[in-house]
Length: 398
Image (tube, rainbow, N blue to C red; front, side, top):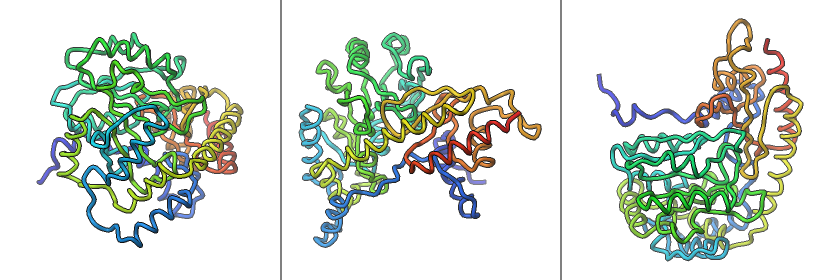
């Protein structure tokens, strides 16, 4: 019997996509499901960006583009990094990819050898650990609890570093928790990294603009480690462009060249039309970004207020993204329904879906058992209905 490769067999399917698929299947059966499982806004792509795409079609941008992206898009990204982040990146240090997810994977596949260790703070985005497996690296997970706002400390980072450590992946604002590292907290981490010049940092900043605490802070701001920091970003979250699949990395030249070489062999360039739309996103009117961020802040406050009516859950106050990550451990282990014990967060999530018709994602997928991730990137009315349904389902547990 033909078998898949060991490389593929070692990977776990994405639980976020699996829950979204399960939600879609129930909807197809006529069940009214409210989907809080997907990392996608309910806003439409702004009109000036769509207009740029229409013009690109009319102007016949239907041919292959350079592997790292059109030069004018990379110039727009360099302009954004200079204008918004105070960083100077030549265009040959920038590689455009089919989403920020591909950018992360490109870097890991380009720098990790079998057995190299990659430090990943938990809670983490579900795909990081799977990408490290794909690169034949070893995940070294640092756990950060709700009591520390899900953020690792400098001493935790120092303790996790070994002679085999090759990379650190840091996501701020964080998916799934919404936590945001301050400049002081990042400086403490940078001080540790200065003592370990062999470590490459992947700074995932895809939620940069969904930030409720002011200026975005990044490890790239510290000159003493900047030549080892790779910025990962894109248009998906800030500009409501998830389906357009445009991400980018800004990196030391040797890493950018490696990712360009790799991408050239397995996907080539990102969509030509989507690239032209992304130029309008980075270079055009930014008022749409603020409008969406203000809406998310209102929804964050709304869902936190609503969740306070549910007994025995604990939540932090996220400073970014459009997720909350409540501790649901009071409902795991000793609560039963129809004689069945709910043993973990994944089972709790499935119970809430099947009983309350609300899709969430269990925290096990994010390296944080006992938690659920809830996206509040839906309408106010859907949030109200979803939390009430969850409350009804949870209070029915005996």
